[in-house]
Length: 207
Image 1 (cartoon, one colour):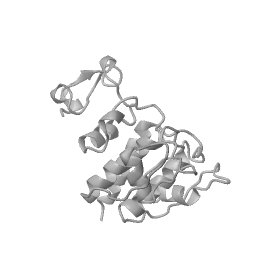
Image 2 (tube, helix red, strand yellow):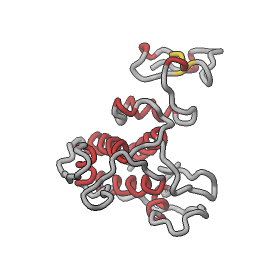
Image 3 (spheres, helix red, strand yellow):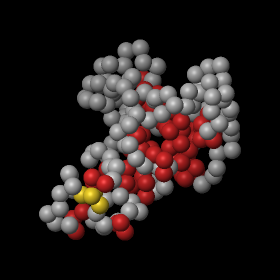
Image 4 (tube, one colour):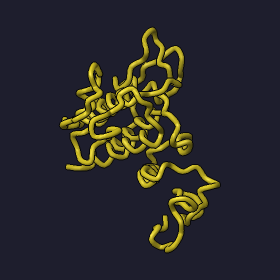
């Protein structure tokens, strides 16, 4: 992919952008392509280049991630980093999605009860934190360190310990919405999901 600095005077904030595998690495018009938000663009493109993002998720980046989509991202990350296919499986009555079966088989995600997984249901920010922590520990075999948090909206949240581990490495796997709010029940978007997987990738490779 070409470097933005090579195109002096081009408006990359509003008109032009780069997409891995498109136009030979040269800029493309944003109006004709689906781009992530400006804060996430570099991270999303890097994750795509690393084959961490299934083709079906390389669009609609501001859309809320579903439970099944988050499983697909987690499978791509774990299998790429470990170099092995996940062989564990757990079945549900409402989906035959192989990625769901794999991640559930590892004990990283659970269903809603009664054999139901709810694959198309949204994933909250606190759910994402719990899954990411388990993906590191159970999927990659590496424990995330706990960090200090200043969020004041976590009263009653079941995910406090996982959220602390989202802040235990620099620059953090997940960020808050502000210095003192995490928004545990807020939606988690595709671009946010992809960004956190890339951060786990980077963290895993550090000694």
